[in-house]
Length: 212
Image 1 (tube, rainbow, N blue to C red):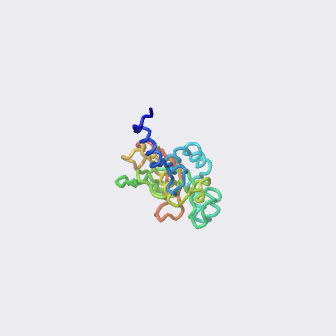
Image 2: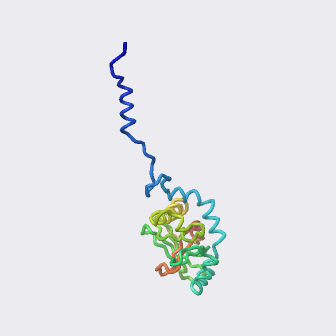
Image 3: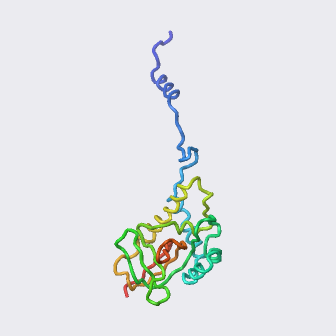
């Protein structure tokens, strides 16, 4: 004899399979590719590619800045990113060493002014976070191109991710008290004509010496 009672577990499963769809996680542009994670990407390339590139490309700040203000294209070919977009300003990799002559640590976008040539006057302003302005670190790297990104938003987020990672791993460890008179040593990048009174350097590596 046949059992005419419905098999409820099987029926429930059939309803679920016909009514429900399991969709893959999509990227912001609607594709099935993984969503771009700028922070993770920066973390993956920082020690392997970013810092070694800057160490090799950077020149002494006085030499770079003198050439940049007289012949920007020549300075860009030697110390900058020759693959930048044509209408973008030059960004240069620099090494900077000198004495801190002023500090602004009241702002979240804290900075120190560095006297490089020993005349008692500031030659460059160095960002020490936690808020870091601009995209100099991203823009100094010749292996990062705008056309490699899906859209302008991803490219902008990538620039911010460099600043965040620099703050997390380098800048947040720097002292904040009694900075004037201390020595500072920086490896980083700055953009020509950023609108600042002084060249604004974003560090990838930074050291501040002990109190004098």
